[in-house]
Every structure is written in C-alpha cells, then in structure tokens.
Image (cartoon, rainbow, N blue to C red):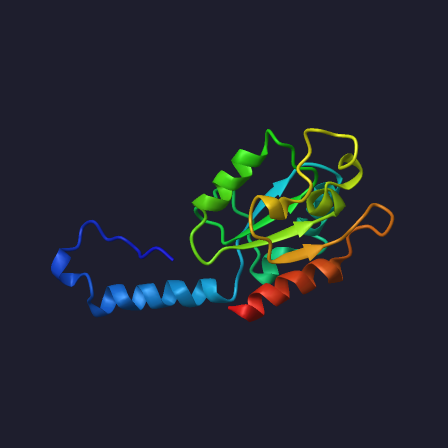
Length: 160
C-alpha cells in the first residue's frame, strides 16, 4: 500500500509517531475490507449488480466499489472479454496497488462461453491476460447466488 503523503510536514518528521500511527491505522482498516473495481460487460455482471443494491448491501461487509484502479485491491471481471478490451483490462490490473486480487465470474469470462468456438474476437479465458485468484462459474439458469459470491469474498478476506 502506498504511504500517506504529508506535503506540509518537514522531511524530518517523516517517521514520527503521527505518520507511522496513521499508516498503521490505514493498513489495519484496509486489511479486512476489499475495495473492488467492477469490470463487467454482459449478463453475469447485470446479475451481480443486483447484489450491490440495497437488498444484499455489500457495504456492510466492507466491499465498497471503486471507480479507480488505484483505489481498488480487487478486480471483479464478469462477461465477455474481447480482444479489443484486453489491453484496457491488463492496464487496469497493472494500475492497481499491491496486494491485488482477481475474481473471474461467469462462463464467458472464464472460458469465452458460447462465443469461444465461433468468434475470432473473444478472449478464451481472462486468465490468459491477468492472474486469476478465484473462478466463479455461474449462468443464467442458476442465477447469481449470494452465497457463492460472498464465499469468494470471504476466501480473499481470510488470506489477508
């Protein structure tokens, strides 16, 4: 994690009690919460978006969606990834600070889905672009189950 910068303080106070305590507090607060960057393109992401809403309220678990990769420590990919979108996904992943995690959700993200056989422009698995920590196979028939998604998040939180 990047250290907190204090432009008004003198360089001699860089390792003082105040700045190290603030760094410890910041690290402690991020330890048990994941800030996901949502990278969704299709059906699975629409199903996942319902989990962010008020019915399941992921904020109470410390999952606060971020719009900037520099603030996120988890990228959640859902939906078809095309060859044209591949460089932007890799770039977003590279902009994330360490430690960073990836959850691939849905058949289209994991294997290319129904587009993997006939389409020349589909990436056949996001793991060919970025390292994936957790794979969640889901489809429209079974729907996105709240328990499956929260189990994936709890596995990542327990590794911290």
